[in-house]
Length: 311
Image (cartoon, rainbow, N blue to C red; front, top):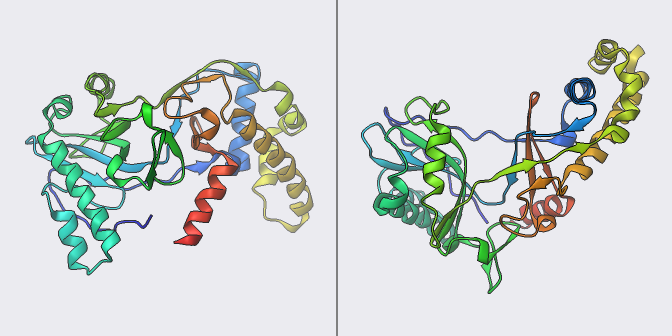
């Protein structure tokens, strides 16, 4: 599925929030991973619990909201905020885009029109507020049958989605500044109350029960005995440290890989089945002190890579 070409609408009332990609858990920098594991062993007795985690879904990275005067807008992953119905399609046509891109742009206009005239959902969004979400808009689906809908790579359970669209909110921002909104929780709680069969609004948050990872991280004990020296070697580019550094990296990567597989779709995460069977989903996102990291399945990554090659 081709991406809609980038364009920006400059507005003094709404800041453009640029898309920020997530790093894979298994590619976390080794010195950061060592710090995290050290804190888990010392502070949590090698147990993971109550880590902020959310579903990673395969939809449309999207934002919608109201400016300071209450005017409704939407914002794509690579566009600025747009207020005028027809702006997306007009831009695509002005660039003499292929029919597929023009049709995709027209869908964005349809979504904007929906938000402008749907009173129930937008009443939960105060002025000067932007909702960052993943959105499934059924008319944009790649394929659909009686049981499932596929938007990009993952086939989701049709019965768990809205008949028109599904919204998974991941954050609330001050529209003018682009900073996190101080009333995020209150706004999200009100937004979830507006969920209905046509437009389902689903909380992507997962509840994490306790996971004991002691045996999995024990191979790092020798590295943690002198953590600062280990980190020094890991970040060294001196030839004399090359072999030692590579040995450390190999040990750490083995632990990261095994831990990734253990955490992915682990039943200790409650809520993995919100959109489809857990093992058929894309994965999860963990919010750690060292940053936010995604864990996705090999099947998803392979299928996603194959789709890119075929474009």
